[in-house]
Image (cartoon, rainbow over all chains, first blue to last red):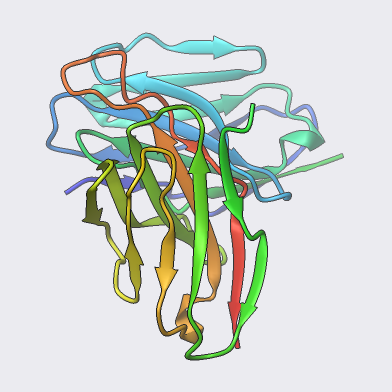
Length: 112
Length: 118
């Protein structure tokens, strides 16, 4: 069975602080994909990143960075210099040869 | 670019009523999905389809039915609405091809249908 755990239910930070959202996954598939989605207060789901299990390179996109470590089955997401517009619920998700399995999400509040 | 289109955006039903949530995609994706999101929770898979004429149950299929007569459309049917089905429903689509390392592109989501059953 596939499972995604986001242990942090809610996080609050002050603007310009860095924040890391944790994601731990379980799967028996040897090939799988990991995703992060953002759900702002307006409710839509915004794709942020996809990672293949055979590519452990970390990735940086502007203020966003992702740290994928197969040894610990983790795919953590860091926002540098957070902004109020980053306030949202962030979901980590996993897919092997099956549809996406989502974590329960982490609600991030960035306070001005 | 329309992407994934869901209708309606909002609906209130009475217990026991039936309705169909519509979902259409124009990206020629083979896979389509229905999820529900309860307050404060992640998304749970209701049904999915790997192509026209093929559907499979997800994690929470009870009380729902689907059909996939075309590549573009994947309607979700509630036959006897119950309060427990009050939720936000998301439809999604993706392109997936086995053995293709570059496939399983991110699922494209519709904007959701907020359904209340009273």
